[in-house]
Amino acid sequence: MQTLQKRQRRERRHARVRAKVVGTAARPRLSVFKSNTRLVAQVINDEQGVTLAAVNSGEEKGKTPRERAIAAAATLVKRAGEKGVTEVVFDRGGFQYLGTIKAFADAAREAGLKF
Image (cartoon, rainbow, N blue to C red):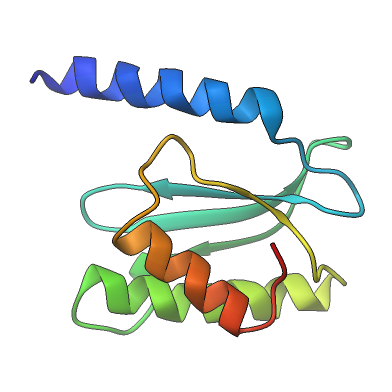
Protein backbone atom coordinates (compact mmCIF):
# COMPACT_ATOMS: atom_id res chain seq x y z
CA MET A 1 0.00 0.00 0.00
CA GLN A 2 1.34 3.41 -0.87
CA THR A 3 2.16 5.82 1.91
CA LEU A 4 -0.19 8.48 0.56
CA GLN A 5 -3.12 6.07 0.57
CA LYS A 6 -2.34 4.98 4.15
CA ARG A 7 -2.24 8.57 5.34
CA GLN A 8 -5.46 9.46 3.53
CA ARG A 9 -7.26 6.47 5.04
CA ARG A 10 -6.08 7.44 8.55
CA GLU A 11 -7.18 11.04 7.97
CA ARG A 12 -10.65 9.83 6.93
CA ARG A 13 -10.91 7.71 10.08
CA HIS A 14 -9.74 10.68 12.15
CA ALA A 15 -12.38 12.92 10.57
CA ARG A 16 -15.09 10.43 11.59
CA VAL A 17 -13.78 10.40 15.16
CA ARG A 18 -13.49 14.20 15.28
CA ALA A 19 -17.11 14.57 14.16
CA LYS A 20 -18.12 13.00 17.46
CA VAL A 21 -15.33 14.05 19.84
CA VAL A 22 -15.16 17.69 20.94
CA GLY A 23 -13.11 19.11 23.80
CA THR A 24 -14.74 21.61 26.13
CA ALA A 25 -13.44 23.63 29.05
CA ALA A 26 -14.82 21.02 31.46
CA ARG A 27 -13.52 18.01 29.45
CA PRO A 28 -10.76 18.92 27.00
CA ARG A 29 -9.77 16.59 24.18
CA LEU A 30 -6.69 14.37 24.56
CA SER A 31 -5.41 14.14 20.99
CA VAL A 32 -2.76 11.52 20.11
CA PHE A 33 -0.55 11.31 17.01
CA LYS A 34 1.80 8.41 16.41
CA SER A 35 4.67 8.31 13.96
CA ASN A 36 7.15 5.51 13.39
CA THR A 37 9.53 6.90 16.00
CA ARG A 38 7.49 8.88 18.52
CA LEU A 39 4.11 9.71 19.96
CA VAL A 40 2.82 13.25 20.43
CA ALA A 41 -0.15 14.02 22.68
CA GLN A 42 -1.97 17.27 23.42
CA VAL A 43 -4.77 18.29 25.75
CA ILE A 44 -6.88 20.76 23.76
CA ASN A 45 -9.80 23.03 24.61
CA ASP A 46 -11.64 23.18 21.26
CA GLU A 47 -14.03 25.93 22.36
CA GLN A 48 -11.16 28.41 22.72
CA GLY A 49 -8.72 26.68 20.36
CA VAL A 50 -6.06 26.46 23.06
CA THR A 51 -3.57 23.69 23.82
CA LEU A 52 -3.45 23.26 27.59
CA ALA A 53 -0.67 20.66 27.81
CA ALA A 54 1.51 18.75 25.36
CA VAL A 55 4.13 16.02 25.44
CA ASN A 56 6.46 14.35 22.95
CA SER A 57 7.68 10.82 23.65
CA GLY A 58 11.01 11.67 22.01
CA GLU A 59 11.87 13.65 25.15
CA GLU A 60 11.28 10.66 27.44
CA LYS A 61 13.61 7.90 28.59
CA GLY A 62 13.01 4.32 27.51
CA LYS A 63 14.27 1.69 25.10
CA THR A 64 11.10 0.90 23.18
CA PRO A 65 8.41 3.22 21.78
CA ARG A 66 5.91 1.70 24.23
CA GLU A 67 8.13 2.47 27.25
CA ARG A 68 8.58 6.05 26.05
CA ALA A 69 4.80 6.40 25.52
CA ILE A 70 4.12 5.22 29.07
CA ALA A 71 6.62 7.76 30.45
CA ALA A 72 5.08 10.47 28.25
CA ALA A 73 1.62 9.71 29.64
CA ALA A 74 2.81 10.32 33.19
CA THR A 75 4.42 13.60 32.12
CA LEU A 76 1.27 14.72 30.32
CA VAL A 77 -0.96 13.96 33.30
CA LYS A 78 1.37 15.99 35.52
CA ARG A 79 1.34 18.96 33.11
CA ALA A 80 -2.44 18.77 32.65
CA GLY A 81 -2.93 18.56 36.41
CA GLU A 82 -1.06 21.84 36.81
CA LYS A 83 -3.73 23.42 34.58
CA GLY A 84 -6.52 21.82 36.63
CA VAL A 85 -7.47 19.14 34.08
CA THR A 86 -8.60 15.82 35.54
CA GLU A 87 -11.14 14.60 32.93
CA VAL A 88 -10.65 14.44 29.16
CA VAL A 89 -12.20 13.02 26.01
CA PHE A 90 -9.83 10.62 24.24
CA ASP A 91 -9.15 11.24 20.52
CA ARG A 92 -7.16 8.32 19.12
CA GLY A 93 -6.43 10.24 15.91
CA GLY A 94 -7.61 7.57 13.49
CA PHE A 95 -5.15 5.02 14.86
CA GLN A 96 -6.25 1.61 16.10
CA TYR A 97 -6.63 1.35 19.87
CA LEU A 98 -3.81 -1.14 20.42
CA GLY A 99 -0.08 -1.24 20.96
CA THR A 100 1.49 2.11 21.75
CA ILE A 101 -1.81 4.03 21.72
CA LYS A 102 -3.41 1.61 24.21
CA ALA A 103 -0.31 1.61 26.43
CA PHE A 104 -0.36 5.43 26.47
CA ALA A 105 -4.08 5.54 27.34
CA ASP A 106 -3.77 2.93 30.09
CA ALA A 107 -0.77 4.73 31.61
CA ALA A 108 -2.66 8.05 31.56
CA ARG A 109 -5.59 6.41 33.36
CA GLU A 110 -3.27 4.89 35.96
CA ALA A 111 -1.64 8.29 36.50
CA GLY A 112 -5.03 9.78 37.39
CA LEU A 113 -6.61 11.10 34.18
CA LYS A 114 -10.29 10.13 33.74
CA PHE A 115 -11.69 9.18 30.34
